[in-house]
Amino acid sequence: MANENKNDGLFHWNFDLHETDSDFTDIDYSADAIDVTSDDAEIKPMIFVDGSYKSGQEPAEKPAKEPAPKAPGKAKKNPFGKAASVVHKKKKDDLDYYDDEEEYSEPKVKRPIPWKPIIIGGAIFLAALAGLLIILISRDHRKKVWAKNEDEQIEQLVKNYFKAKTEADAAAMEKIVVPEETVNSLQMTLESKAYESYNDIRIYAYPGLKKTETGLFVTYNSKFWNIDTQLPTIGWYYVKQDDQKNLRLMPLTDTNTPEYKYIVNTYDGSPVEKLSNEVSAANKNAVESDPILKKYLAQLATNNYETYVPETTEAPTTTQPVVTEPTTTAYVPEGPIGYVTGVDDSVLRMRSSMTTEEDNIVAAFPEGYALEIIEELDGWVHVKDMLTDDGHGNPQSPTGKEGYVSADFFEKAE
Image (cartoon, rainbow, N blue to C red; front, side, top):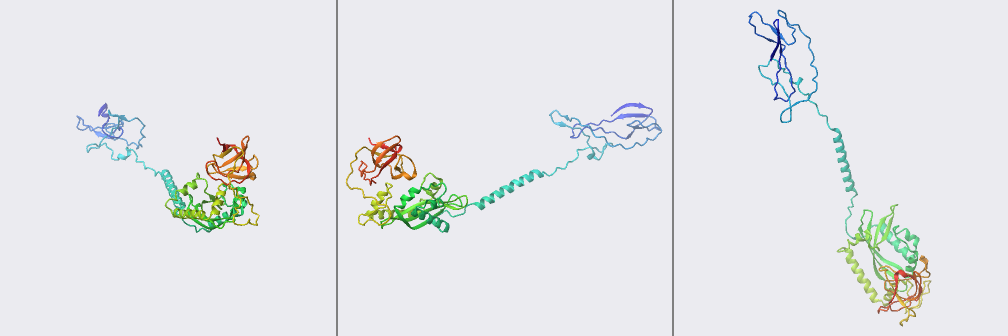
């Protein structure tokens, strides 16, 4: 506390109370008035900080002033780099201390509720919950086992498929098989010359890759024209829906399709594996027990679908085409021979002209089949099917026909 001026019993004092160990901003405190001792016992001057007192007078009342807002300023920092503040701590003897500390303290700000992140978080949670419910609802809960088919639509679809094959109805077949399946009307016509009917059809089903799809294992007996013994046969199929949700049948002949790979993985140890073994055994027994059937199957192996005429019966009085039985004596070719190559599980078609039109196919031959070469042309080979032996000791059942085959799948013997 310092006395700056003394005049006519009036003292002007400045009171600066500072302490640097507080978290508050620097504050100057002043008293309204204080008693000051004097040598004259009768004089007790009063000292006011604004200098409004004069000896023998009472101080005039001044209107109360609202405290001016404190100008912003930089806080002092202590030697450790942290912001330091100065405040006067309350003591019992401090008469000039204001009890209302809140007037000089930082106002307490009420934090608003963070509604935005709460709403966003809630929306994400509800979306995740809805997605989980959709997955659970759409999940395929079908039991993954092979069982006898009980779906009437699938039953009718398979029957329609074999009916179209028997009648060589290409238009009906296009409405039965999947759109990706190519319907060869000529091939259907050729097969109908061999297969009279398909009997005793039994269907076993397995849940497919999707909820609307089904894998099928089908057993049936193939009846050939003019042959009494029926041939037990098996087939693999797959049922799918088209864009109009109609059921379509997919023969599983392509081993690279996802449907085929899926069904193959269900086979080992399943009931259809046992059934397949039983049908295969019955198939072998039927072939070995009937020489006529065995001979005709050898003819079919060369894709010769002409109706078989047993040697012990007269020719049937039907419109079915009849072929002459191949000679039993060895045929001696007039020219060089060649072999079908590069077709693997497929066949090489003989055509009546050097074009790839569907209606000019006259025969088809498997891998390794031997043909007599008449003439080698540009991209084509003119051949004759007359060989009863392929030259490696393997018998053949020649059709006696001649035509043209692609040079890309036929090699001349060395």
